[in-house]
Amino acid sequence: MRVLQIDASARRAHSSSRMLSAYFIARLRHSLPDLALDYIDTAADCPPPLNATFIEALYTTAAERSPAMKQALSYSDNLCARALMADMLVCAMPMYNFCMPASFKALLDQLVRVNLTYTLNADGSTSGKLAQHKILFITTRGADLRPGSPWHNMDALRPALQAAFAFMGADDPVFVDVQPLENIDSLAKTQLLAQARHTLDALASRWLTGI
Image 1 (cartoon, rainbow, N blue to C red):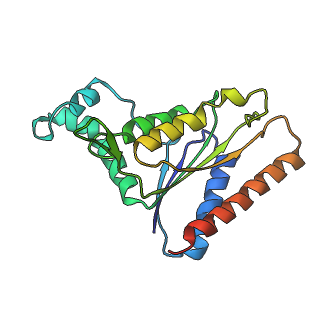
Image 2: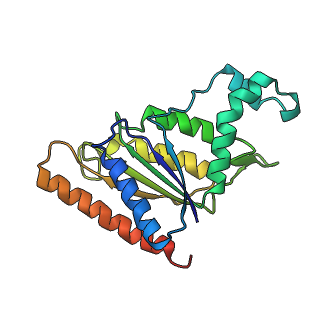
Image 3: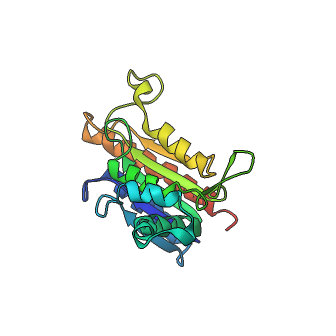
């Protein structure tokens, strides 16, 4: 079993999303001591933004790409290979300004690649390559954006992740959204995080069944 774990919080020691992703990985490793873990921290090592050379390279056949084009694609080539090799993707991030951190968006731009993580079919449809992957998104939010909240229509994070990963074949990712974590007392925050860990426990047990 191989897991690609991706953390995107700009915070370190006090990051709830990092703590929860580490907890889930530890839960998996408890049952699978030989778990193979690949790790990316987009905040510490932000993926390069797309540039003109990258875009030009996408429209150039592999045999005709210049050294500069190959270099522009190298991060994406490696990232896509790492994602395709994994059985599970565990992506943890806070919500920043109602959507994903910029560093994770940069990673997503490098990951959605024609002929690597998805293919264009003759009829114009697409086929994603992550259909067999188990995908988990752990998100932390300062405000309460659940249905019924005054902010419920401001959640641009979940739809953006769902759309991008569905395009790559992952139609049914699991979301563990922890909210609200700001402007609450310490007891309420402790309870929210405990509930999230309980949800992650149940998910780990479900995913490990049959392995």
